[in-house]
Amino acid sequence: MNRNILKTFDALVISSRLKGYKHPGGIKYPGGITYYPRFPDHKDPEYTPTKLFRVERIKSSKHQPYWLKDILDELKIHKDTRVAVVKNIPEMNAKLWKIKHLIKITPIIFPYGEPTLEDINHTVLKENGQCLVKKTLAPSENQIVALDNFHNDNKKMDSTTIKRDTRYKWNNAFTGGF
Image 1 (cartoon, one colour):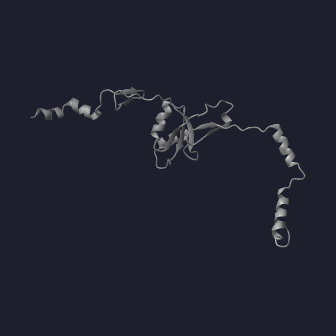
Image 2: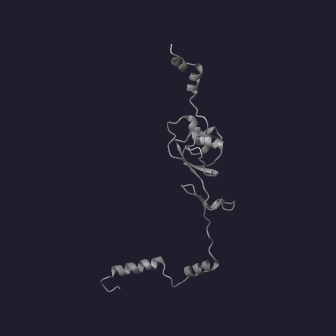
Image 3: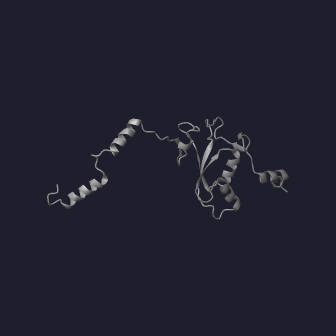
């Protein structure tokens, strides 16, 4: 028999084929990910991961297995609510990976800095992941006084007077109502 044929049936060769060929080298990242750059001198750009994710359900959980529905229930986006905010931690990322075909993940960014405890009631989360602080401005005292004077002015025409006057002019347009 030919030696090449015997090599293909060697126990080591068969076991390595079952496990798959792993190219030597690469950059190992935490979580068991090995990255093989195109060029050997390639450097990854500096990136700071976001602290929070905006998770939106984009597909129904109908006809999905119960364990995926359980993850959606845990995130509270199973039935009526479609959006949840979750932490960017490995345990949550593992759950999101399992339901990635049902959801859309957007990193939450704070363009004007993170909100403080006083700002929590005034925050707005947009669909693109921007978290903005929108405080309401209080009017000054002279604006309040001017508004009260306007409402209490006797010379001011109210809506009923304006409606009555314009109706009269409309009805008497050709008889000298103007």
